Image 1 (cartoon, one colour):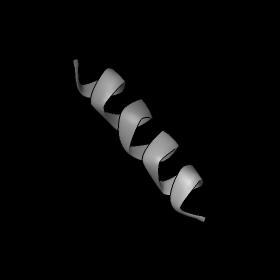
Image 2 (cartoon, helix red, strand yellow):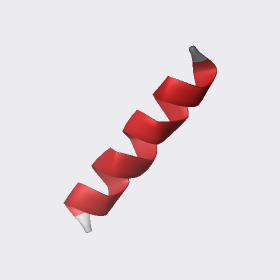
Image 3 (cartoon, helix red, strand yellow):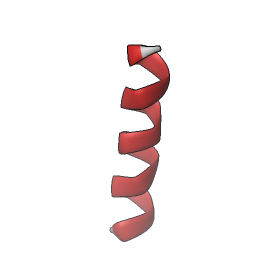
Length: 17
């Protein structure tokens, strides 16, 4: 779902930071 995709993106951004 879109919600899951958004959460994945946010998680990746946090990991990169």
